[in-house]
Image (tube, rainbow, N blue to C red; front, side):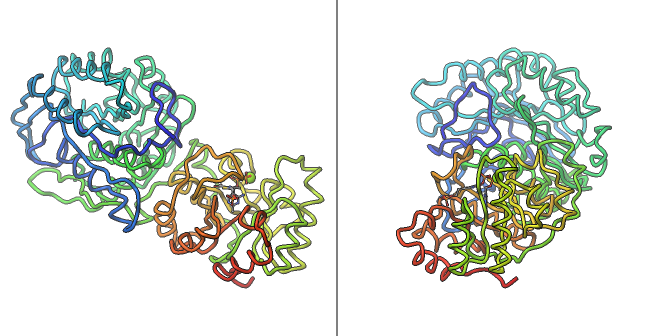
Length: 532
Ligand SMILES: Cc1ncc(COP(=O)(O)OP(=O)(O)O)c(N)n1
Ligand SMILES: Cc1nc(C(=O)O)sc1CCOP(=O)(O)O
Ligand SMILES: [Mg+2]
């Protein structure tokens, strides 16, 4: 999917992979805890490929356009020098001629004329070059409350620059300075979003820390919460607050990590969750390097479950019970997904022990006999039968389990399913959805779609092997995983090599030339899963 500018950004949207270069446009920090120096560390340090050898993902590469030179250490800033416009222009032209960006990350701008110059460049972006995604981290007011960008600059930012911005990443001080809205209640974020939208911003990612004081969200006293919206929907990342005085460069590093994730082909909401984890990991390890607050550390791709946030599409989800569901074996083996009891029986007779009835778009009345039959067959063949979608019927007839998608989570009664004691599998299509689903402690998580599929219309982009492997290893000690989507026999071995225990397939069996031979082949590779 290619990036379409000037339309509403969708959370599952992925940049096209024509380049993975990120330009960071901002100020030099001689202490290197923040500014361009932190950005380069974060952009190049957060390389998915380094953490997943053999990956074919693009390698993020930072380039810089320096707007300002600051003389600072961990205690103070003694001088700030604005780079002249003709030097800005030279940096821009050199990069444009040779290393055009996938993402531009803007931070410190030193004067209204720098803002106007930058807005002009973006206005006259060459027609022959794909437009980059533009992130603006205002760097107007530091977490400490120190003013870094004077009022006249902010005014020209609002008038000239914001209309070019795809993702704005303000902290709460900057929200107040730019919109006049203090973030005291969660509804204030919507009001602030609306105000930014008036200036033409396409989406806003409210950076946490200070949002942590929202008075109507109980958890945020002990947690930090980042929140993103494009006006159509919200996405939240929530983590326990890291108590440290060493957080210099946190905001810059977060926005740069977001840029890096996007440039490497992660969907916006996934890059958001990964950037959040990157900063959490860096804050936990941060130590003093001078006499003042130390910088957030740059420790590469986050691989520890505890650094990742809980994610949600709505703040109400934070109140959902998390006592968990009945467990299923970590190895479910070969997992065919079929649309009728006839298919179910055919495959159970061949030795399949995990299977799903996916008979779409029926009324509960029409689905009920199919569900009853599927459950009976499961008992007869001592197999694990999951019912897709019809969760009320699955409870009523005591199925082994139910499988639900992300949208179903908005409507299904999660508590009722949990207390019925049946298992639940949840679909996920990236880091963000994975973290959202994992918070409910389901019986397993399905990671999809790995390859293009014709079985179902997917709004998301195929994840591929690297992303599957990353998520499987992250979830290893947390939840059983199942891979699904476009997995055929030639791809089966490499999918298995990611460490995923179970593989779900539709066409690989239902459209096989010889179903008996194909099933035996698949069972030989993946197995039938653990005994009950
Ligand atoms: C094992 C497995 N994984 C994912 C899905 C997809 O479920 P869902 O998102 O609910 O979409 P539909 O199948 O209902 O179209 C699945 N069925 N099984
Ligand atoms: C039903 C379904 N769900 C998916 C997901 O990613 O959530 S992919 C998918 C279709 C899988 O079919 P096939 O094996 O024929 O590609
Ligand atoms: Mg479903």
